[in-house]
Image (cartoon, rainbow, N blue to C red; front, side, top):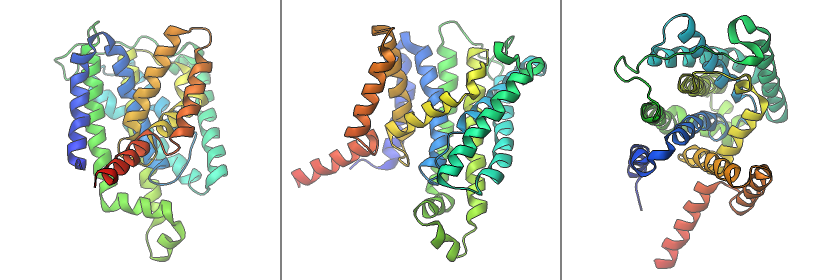
Length: 315
């Protein structure tokens, strides 16, 4: 059986090998990395805390706008923009979490949905700052770390996004493998029992909410820097749903679920849109339904179960 550390190494090796295996698809790989990071951030809430939310686009969008505005009006250094985007989203997560975490299940979903709508309308109304419906334009990023300018081939963009994803994944793993992460799983499984043993449930859920929001903000900042544009739909309800679908595809609460689901979703979307520009939404929906019915726990859960059955068969 392959150890978790070895699998982590394989994930990092796959990120490093992508430019050599698919040099003509670096833009697609960059998008995969950004969305995988966003899905990874959502997994902390959905998979490990048991909090289903449709509000994650708010944190992604705030991170994107914060990094974009920072680049236009202050400093176009990408790494500084990542920090700004992450901090802005974390601040929103702190405020929103204080309100949203008073509810659970359907009420939480509806309130998180309302949060996205409020943030989107605020971005639309503040056209003097965000560009409104036209989006935030005029973003011109400087070289990464002052030494690596973005190039037309997309190699620097991909390398930059992949490195940020790799570091974020290691942070994510450190969180879920810690005592704090195990307590989140305990809250997911039986919140009442965690209250009974004296665990600070509310504090830990708020902390997880802030960490999740910060990672989503970093993903949004990456998107703004790579695209040098922030569209209003970056804080749309549809995007929140897409991120949740990516996570469900890969497997919520699974270490590698987001890293499998997001690239698979982006690949299917890109391939089907090229093959059938008219009805690609239909084919994508049918494929998603098939995967969900055949692997209800996500593809990572399905492959884990298949590996266990094969080991038993050869035992």
